Amino acid sequence: MNAPADPTNPLRELSQHEDDVLERIGKIVSERTVVRGERHVGDDAAVLRPLVGEAIVSTDVAVWGIHLDAELFPLRDLGFKAVAAAVSDLAAMGARARALVMAVTAPAGTDLDELHYGAAEAAQLTGCPIVGGDLSRGNQVSIAVTVLGECPGGGAVLRSGARAGDELMVTGPLGASSAGLRRRREGFALNDELVLTHRRPWPRLREGMAARDAGAGAMMDLSDGLGLDLHRLADASQVGFELDSIPVVEGATLDEATSGGEDYELVFTTSDPGRLRMLFQDRGLRRPVSIGRIVADPQRRLLAGEPFDRKGFEHEL
Image (tube, rainbow, N blue to C red; front, side, top):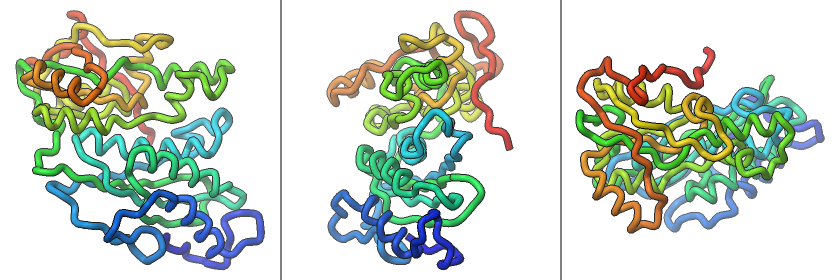
């Protein structure tokens, strides 16, 4: 990991030299075995084997108190969520995860060990190793994660490939994350099933690759809610849609499923739903849920025959 601008300023209240902090963090994020022929943490930059097919790159930023409530969740969850959310962007393209780098800004007193333990957990579980990063002093805790992925043979799934007649599908019921945040505010424990979904989201990497291999036309992850992200997909493809229903996870409301956001399920289109379902089944994946169809008229965007409002999580800039 690279050094902050001022090596004499420790990031914790304890009297520690920056090199000690970096060495400790390096051990935390490098517990998994490094791929032969690669060099991860420890130099000015990481060395990776060549990527196969198309190279997929994405960056996400998570801010303590904005993307995760600092009064309700431990700092370790912010590290996990930052990595998982970034890796989900690879899933949305149908890519295989290869590596990530993360840059952390934090005020003095921040428990950087806890933050990086959470990030390392997510990296190990998703098979996307942390190969480098940076540290700097700042007024609030924020994590910028850049992920690298690959699509062997090419053919990353874009938002712009939906066509009239395609079936619309999602990888599972929606609303769990938003309902989990609500339940946590109501006093539910951290290990409550829905609360866990909010604090430890799971990127649908296997599902994304299966959808790509089955010829999905368009795809994206539902980070800001179906009520916003589906409109974005339709805008990119210049089409409309007719939804029959929205699958709602048990314990959530329809509004949470529509506009709560941070579910990180995938929404995608296919002209061959039978083939897609068969491939999901063959790979031991949960059966995708059909929610409607794509239509040619970009102005026609309906749920059960009624206008489907454009509503979801909007970032304030």
